[in-house]
Length: 143
Image (cartoon, rainbow, N blue to C red):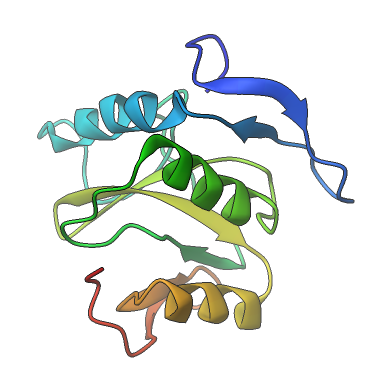
């Protein structure tokens, strides 16, 4: 979320798209951006977190680490964002609104990676863009 002081200038050294690493200011900026999705002006869907414009993909999977009642320290939150950005297909943090509940999310090309992350963070499901379908991952969505 460049320009809002929410990320540092460090970029990843992995192959693929580069991304700006999250830092301890990221959580507040993300919460503020995601809270905008509570407005009735935004339908359920996926949005670019910086521009709040809808995004769609023809393939890949949408996954998050957000959990019901989560309460991360700023450094824990930054670590999780960086973990997901490191495997993200486009290096972007997205905002998803599903069943009228907004959260940050990430687009991942590999189904196995998306499921592994979803299970690690006890997620109920991931979104399969290619089939426009929810894939249950066995979690409860709680921390």
